[in-house]
Image (cartoon, rainbow over all chains, first blue to last red; front, side, top):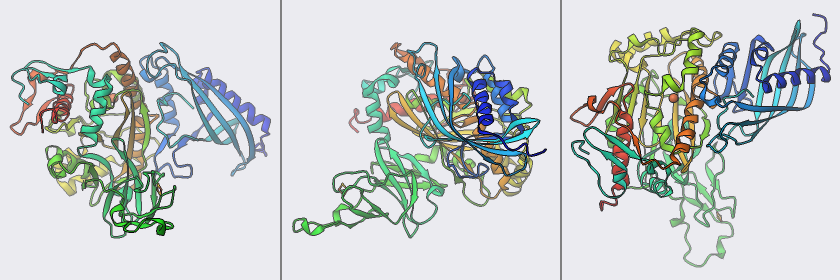
Length: 168
Length: 426
Ligand code: FES
Ligand SMILES: [Fe+2]
């Protein structure tokens, strides 16, 4: 791999926008393919903790990402029936060199807006929520750019959160 | 409370109607503000509630903030290792003093006018104290101690009222199950980690009922279980490990259990080593075959009114408002087992029961839907499933099959007693 690891900000933005589009359009199987086989997707509670020893909001390897996506496709997934509609809004993108030759680091801000439709008069439905976060990606070049690590640091990560059964 | 005749009394006891064949709970228990206020006053602010685990305040100076009913408290450990439950309320003008979840400090300084207290409660500093009239003394102005605080197997409970039985007596009906839970650690205590914090739009009792409800999982969690199945992940595959099969129990005092097969952990977390057999072999070595089997059985133990002991989590239920409840689910680290086995348990608990778990959010969805339905004020809810087949032991312990509503009936038998007791002139 010949210095493919240099990613421009614009390339990084294109990559993140595409991920956001897949999530917002609920096109989850292609979303799985954005990750490398060994990738970890992590939403910590303590930002600098070790997820093998500390509580995390989410800590997914490839198997668990796949499980989630299968569950999201299941017709009797009650936490997602009716399903969440989301807007993933990505800003403040910055790129820097990765730790390996074929890797790059990307940092961005993310706000996920979420609402569940249906009979909006019922408790839990119809509430528009915003989840602001800082995201840290490690992208790795394997024929194309893929996510080798994704960390989402929610600003309200210590608060009681309601129904995070959609993908952030 | 006898089940032979209708036991309708006046007032709050009337909200639970029991005959020999029927068990009904009035919808008012979930939807009336007056009932909620009385629950906070009579249950949460007058009886034993779970407040934390020894390991959360392991070192001298460690503290944790919590809430009993609506009272903010600080749980502290002083330099000699003694545990205190103190009201987190300044004796000057009632400012909340400590504003962190966890920390370590010998003293607490009120942010308003800097009155300063030792972590055992004594007032040790009053700025410009000379301005107070003659006779002013800091002696009677210590932080108020919660009337009772005591622990069992690392679980710390407190009561704002001194007029309660000893903790030992409160826990005695369910103690055997607390021991089985605590014995999952070998040669030491569990280490409780920071909690998953989540909330739902429904009454607090929905979570109490649901954690020991064996009727709903196959239905509410169908999407999770069928997904696990597709991926070849065993959930409760090792049912053969359990002698009695899957059962539910209800105890006097409102406590209950739901007991199933042991998790074998097969197929979960490809990157994580599979140490379940090694762990079980170690348990057999230490406790013998029979007890080891009991220890590894899947067991949900509910201790009235606010805590569940699960295989991978301690779950605290905190009522906030009539239709809004917070839940704090603490994963815990076992003592005396390999780290990677604990990591695997952490992963499994997160996968199923965390804020983003594949199992838990669907339960919370049911609670919101339940609360929505109750706006219709339909009079009675039906809780008599398995009633005629439940076994009643002389000590009042009841047993039924996994999907019977034995635990829920035990909850409401006790609930009615506590809610009605001052009416009865106690
Ligand atoms: S209220 Fe605490 S010092 Fe005044
Ligand atoms: Fe459930």
